[in-house]
Image (cartoon, rainbow, N blue to C red; front, side, top):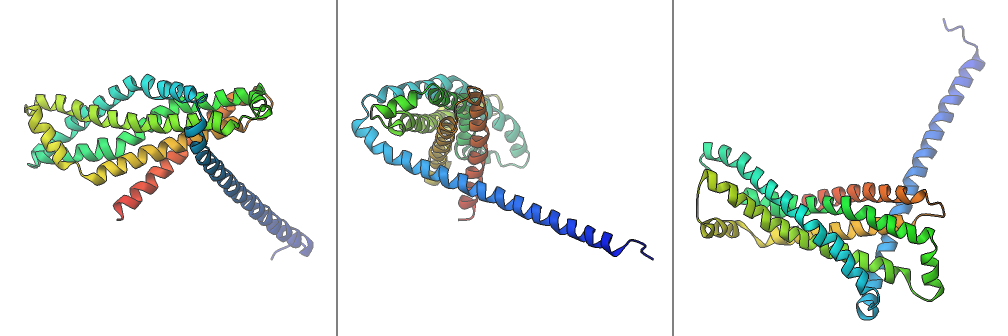
Length: 281
């Protein structure tokens, strides 16, 4: 027999419903905040795209920023990207070729290299390199400008900070990732060729003829689309976090960390969506 009084039963029922209501309200607020942030990010992306045209025709003063951004993001990261590409190409050959030889499918190494290096790992790993090097740098640089009132100074003299600060970094990162992806594919396949000489020596003409024979136009399109999309995501996330600081200098490193985290998240989500669309076609 339950000896609890009716009032205690009612109180327990009240707190049960009260906790459920709090949970529903908390979840709703989080979902609302997420969609609000996504909407704001898309609006900022559209505003940046709108500023690209003005930058191309009137951005003489900002082209130096674009050149410096490409120098830092592409040229300075080229050595690391080549080293990683050669290692990945060698690893695919070292690991995959012995197993393919056992089942008599040595020629399958060529489509495997195209899939792994050109279509999948190339855009993703170059995006990770740029996130680690450039996303933090861009976010902290823009955040420092906001804290030191440089952005307000640009606005006071009639200079659009989106066109002068955001657009050159947006274009620089996107162009750099696209170029890095090309070099990654070239040196990844070349590294695989160097390792293949230890297992099955062949002339370069035979190797690269077979590679080009397996390379389809859709592989190039998917790889290029990924690199461009990833570049736009990384640049927008970094710039947005930089502009999002308030007045405290302690927000600068936080902006850099948020830029890295959000860039990783959205690049992975974009990669999953692109892969799903490609393999479901």
